[in-house]
Length: 312
Image (cartoon, rainbow, N blue to C red; front, top):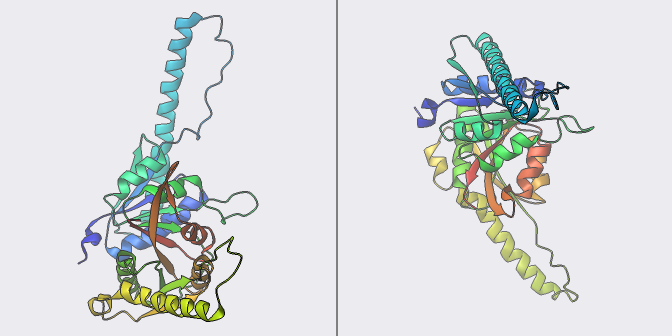
């Protein structure tokens, strides 16, 4: 049995519809792996409004006001903890009802959801989160929790989104470099687990150099394009090198297309049950950030997306 099957599937819940959808998907993932399910609810400072009872100022004095504020904060923390436990236990019961025999552990923690999920994800076979509607585009944009978890988690993360309602029996892996072997291997594992076909897809475009006033001669451009095309064709082949032999039961093909990577992967997701991406995270001024292609797929894919952390 694969070592990851001994580790739990972790799902983040907050009582919302999108987290319940993630819960239902996490139940299926745990059953597929023969793994236990941990239902995690992190404390949120935004679930309850602060106690705004008027009339204390000027009556209790400074010391009394400080003591009252401390007592109110403690009561609020307890209320939040009770609410988190209720959410986790209710979600766990839903999971048990949908998959009798599945080992389910509710967990309510006194830390914010991002920190809790990142911590739990370091010891999980898979961490599952949902998406959140934003503005007039319900289900289109990710919530801030999902994006921050994606930027920091150490293990595989599934973001449950998309509108595919029936199985496509296909897993798509998007690779940027020939060294994205961790993502490719994960794709082979998922395809084998689901008895699905596997498409390892690499998309590329010739770079545009703004400010270049005089283009090179046509012959030179053709030579550059041909050399670049040869390299790009090798990328998915390098990523799957040795994996076909390791997973002989997987019907796998590698494909290179000339197109914007984000557009190509979103288009491919319409015919897939799952898209797997190597998450190339890079340090930026305000911390770790995901690349533009990953953002595009997370926001627009037609099926769930799994990010496999990869060194930049």
